[in-house]
Length: 119
Figure 1 (cartoon, rainbow, N blue to C red):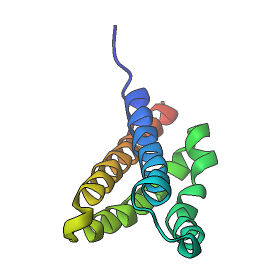
Figure 2 (cartoon, one colour):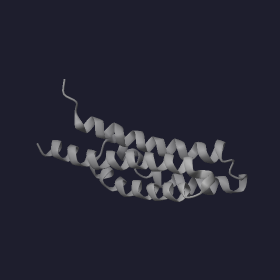
Figure 3 (cartoon, rainbow, N blue to C red):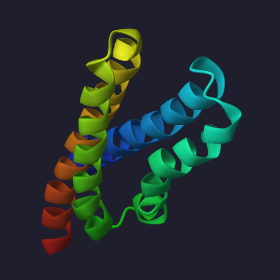
Figure 4 (cartoon, helix red, strand yellow):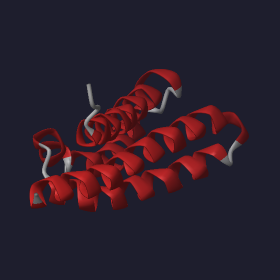
């Protein structure tokens, strides 16, 4: 039984993507106890960009994976920003890990799926 690289890359992408999506939501709603007046702004600013590639990622579109890797870099920077604060270091490390999974998955999916489509 041969493991398909495209499937592994796709699941890596989705794991990182949904890890970011769920982690950001849980952090601001349950863990960090963001003030009520700022919760909607924080969720729109941090979750809003993640909504743009959702349909294409779920459909497995190569082009969406190709440009979503730049979005993963943004969340890596956000994770480094949170990790630089002493009280938010674990959340920052979580964002860094999820964004790296998201980035690696998109890069590998774009590479392997485009090769598979060419054959």
